[in-house]
Image 1 (cartoon, rainbow, N blue to C red):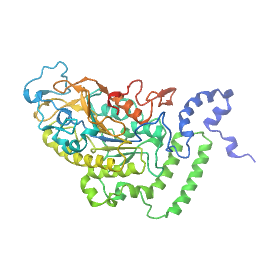
Image 2 (image 1 turned 180 degrees about the vertical axis):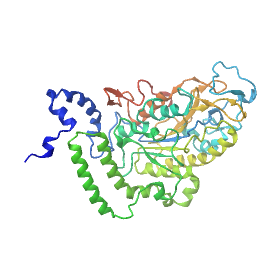
Image 3 (image 1 turned 30 degrees about the vertical axis):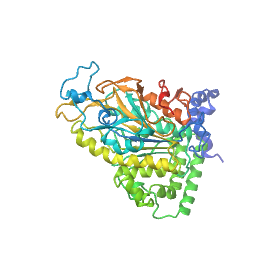
Image 4 (image 1 turned 90 degrees about the vertical axis):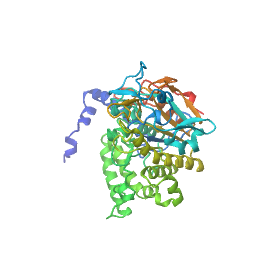
Length: 469
């Protein structure tokens, strides 16, 4: 009897059998992109060795999306007081929108710690407790003054083309220390930020390395993580169903070589099953003593950072914590009120979070990074004269823990705070430094796709040695 499967050929079978195998030469280039996943098909998030022993094992990215003002937070500019309301004649002063004269900061700066680093009152708690363990980079710069490409540059290393996110690269390189939770988690309250899941995508890397989004506006566990419980079937029944689906998927996979999308789906089903017990525990901050919750604060950012600490304790490799959907820090007017209300809960939560990392022995192995996609202008925006425009020419970020030199200021902007002028650090340099701290040569952590070896830093980037401990 002739079987139907003996007669019908898939396109791949036809290429494999025909033309003396010439078709397979082209196909091999496509399939080679899946080689990394093939080595760990059962679990692509299994722990992996970096190029060398790094000082950091985990990364926490506190993302102040919208662009916080550096001259109102971590880069004091006393000349703005002197020239308040007056036009500035700096030759570098190029803005996206119409602006007026200099706008002094409505916030007071003060020196903190043994290092005497000046920080504004917006982050007084954090500075008072931790400034000697923080490195303030005051010379960051990006490419353009627009949110979308700047978000993509900060998160994915390219402002235009679809590239894997930093978290995807990190989990691709290191895997995860907990096989019952995602290796990369992105928490953003109130919905997606600008350009949505592109900020944590895996792009051409295997899908298992994409970030898992959590809407942290919810506190009830079943709303925080959708479908965390099956209301009808027991875990044993689900296991039997999952085993059947897995056998079907693996049979399908066996006829198609190593298909990244299908392998990622198999892994996702398994991870979702395992998460039912582990995630409920990790995300339930009610298991923490009331005194601990009070230190972090009852607001959403307190909840986010307390969850983050619990995820780090369970071995999650990277956690990205967002200010919220949209562009919360994009304050084109009334910056005194808006920055003030935004920073207060963050200041409380960050101070408590860094303290907890130190107490629990996680600080030295966790790289914590704070900042937005760019900064803001030192001049007032028209109309209103109370806010600031986008500024990618110069802005501030800070890093702490995980091999970072504490009590240190790197680089500077010009006298008014418009453009990076000393020891400039591009976003590519920041990415190269992060990978270095994790144990990677950023030029060698690559993935072959479409005939080219890609990396997070593209063809750019240098390690900023001056900020390393």
